[in-house]
Each structure stands twice: as C-alpha cells, then as structure tokens.
Length: 501
Image 1 (tube, one colour):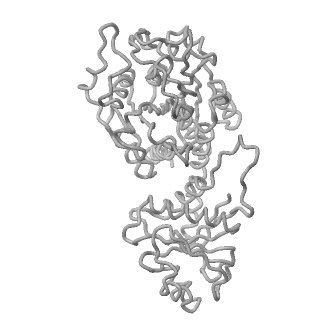
Image 2 (tube, helix red, strand yellow):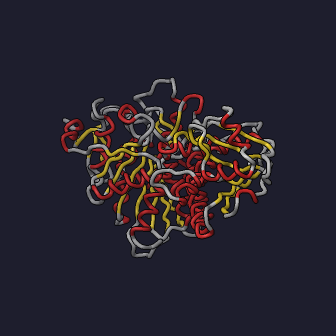
Image 3 (cartoon, helix red, strand yellow):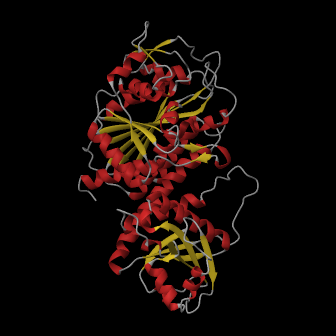
C-alpha cells in the first residue's frame, strides 16, 4: 500500500473516503467540526440522534455528505479525549484500515493526525499508523491453494498534516514506518513458515539472499562441523540430535565507519523444538515452529536497518538448530564443554535455547562489540511472570537496560526489566560440572538469564525473553513481529544519540 502526506482544506479533498475521529460522548474533533459546518450540521444532527457515541472503535460510514467532494466520510470512535493512549490509537487505526479494505475504498485521506495522543507528535502518529496499517493487512497464505483477496483493496492512504512545514516530518515518518513494518513482515513470514521448510539451512539461505539484496550486508555461514571443531560443545549437544545440521549464520551490516564497534544481535533459531529426549507434550507442539522467533526478529531488524540505511555497524548472529530426539541426541545428565571452556550439566534437553545461545554469545566476543543483545523465545516461565503483553528484559549494564526500556516505551513494544541478582545463581549449581542448564521451576526466566550472563562477562549485554510476545495462540494464531519495533527504535535512538541522524 502506498502512503503519502498532504496539507489542505478538508472541504477541497477529492477522495474515495475521508477519515475523521469522534470522541466520546459525541464530540467531534477540530476537523470533524469543520466538516459539520460545511455540511450545514448534517453530521451533528446524526450524532444528536444517537447514530454514533464515539466509543473506541465504533464506526459510522456515510456516503455523499453534503458540500464535500469525498465519496464517503468514515467516522471512527476514539473514546474519551483525555484518555487516548498509544494502544487505543493503534486500535483506532486498525479499525479504520480493515473497514476501508472491506468496503472498497481504494484510497483515503486520513485526519487522525488531528487526534491528541499524550506526549506523541505528528511523526509518531504517522509512523505508527503506517506500522499498524501494514500489520492489519498482513496475511500468511503462502501454503493455501486458494487466496482470500479483497475485491477492491485499499491501495493509497494519505495523511493530512496541519501545515506545509510538517510535510517533510510526515515523509520521514512514512519511510521509517514502512521499513519497520517490512522488518515485522519478514519476521512474521519466517516464524509462520512450518518447520519442515524453515530448517537451519533455510534460514542460512535467507541470510545469503539478504547479502544479495543489500550491498551493506555480508553473510557468513559457520557450519556444524566447524563449530564442533572449534569446541562449541553446548551448541553441538542440541544440533547433533537432528538430521538437519545446525549452523551459526552471521550477517554483518556496515553502515558506520569501519573502526566503529558494532552492536551485536544474537537470535535463538531453534527451527523446531520437540524438547529432545525430554520430550514435550503433544498438545500445542505445532507451535514450537515459533521457537526461532528470536532469530526471525533479528532478520526483521536487519531488514529494517538496511532499508532505513542507518549509519551504524550491526552484526547479527543466528544460532540455528533443530532440537530432536534420536539415537544421537543428548541425554539428561550429559556434561558438555562450551565454547568458553565452561562445563555444563544438561539436566533437561528441553532447556536447549540457552545451550545454543551461550556458544553464540562467546562467538560474539571476536567482534569487540559495543553492546550485545540476545533475543529468544527462552522460557514458559516469562509468560507466568508477564503474560503476553511484555517481553522480559535482563541486562548486566544499567545504561543499556534503560535505553532498551526507553525504546520499548517509544515503540509501544513493551518490555519489563527483570532482576539479575547473584542470589539466583545458586539454583544452577551442579555436583558434577561448573553449573547446570536448569534452575528448577521457581524464577525460571530469571535463572535462564543468569545462565546466559555467565557467557556475557566480557561485554555490555542484554537479554530479551520473548516467549510470551513472539506469537499468538488460539483463533488468531500467528507471529506478531515483536520485538522488531523495540529493537529498531533502540538502534534509531543510538544513531540520534551519536549525532549521526
């Protein structure tokens, strides 16, 4: 879909549809009042008769409003004016986009920039409308023999701004919003692809395609045999159980000076997780194709960064493997030596994500990173702690933790800072190795992060546990694209902080 900005009087807009907000109870926005005056109180009379209250998400679609040049005017309920939040704003945009797409309005001019979202400016409102619009229209039908297509889909969406001075701001917001939305779509496509297709090899090939598409990206594949030879015993303990060999897929984005330290993103890429010998229950196991959600989000963030051409250096390390039960698979009680030289007692083969990640974190040291952030669908425990609204955030460096929290608020891609205290390390003690890979049921997400922190002592590090936010279950089953907005915002903030914007 094409997005653009313009500035002009509402009565002069010739379009298939005008989009205007209505607050509760029956209160028109400033632009709505202008339309009402132009139409000789046609709108106000409808509201007074009770056709619309203005409750959040309520819709009133009118045809041929008197004295306007638009074919239709779509009024959308925005709730109470003083209580309009970022999440409600996105709900409003989603309702508008789906309604327009279903009713045959192939183009529209949007005046939702007139809404007052506390602390949010024109750039934010346009960028997040673009992101939400793409999310609303996203479908994953690659494996359906018959596609569902709108008869007259929405093709052009124009944001009206209050003055010509804001046109450039709006254009920047659209560019950034399109890039982040493309990153989310990349993430959702990869995560939604079934495990029989999206194998470790599939992900590495996708990374090679990135290198062909973007001149700023270089891709390197480190094979399972190479990893075994270099001593990545924790990674190999997971990967060796599958007939599909694992690998480390490395993408290096060069947008800044060559001597500038890179930011490193490490993604957990378990393309299917049976639990290994510690086999998972059968119910819901199909969703374990989403256990590469961390890796998918790193792909998505790389796409967003490359599309925005951010002036920084970024390295993506994707730890890809399948966790399968077989005669070659690791057993509970096995002891392995990680790439760092630390030994690990494997108490549960279903705690495999931390095993591939720990060797990937050690591998990251060779890049002399500015910071390292790993992203993983790591624990069910984080869902017990935070539900499906917030990702769990851990960090061994307070400024980095604060920057990620700030980015999560700006992007409305929520995270919550969790403790990383030494006291929790006792749960990982082992009688036979340096430590185990399992800390028991109490504080399961925290002890998983504590485990990873043992391999992140040489750099500033953060960990995002996205097991509760990377996908939805039930009727709306599918990947969410998170935390691409958070990571993209973090990287954009880094650029602005360094004065490169």
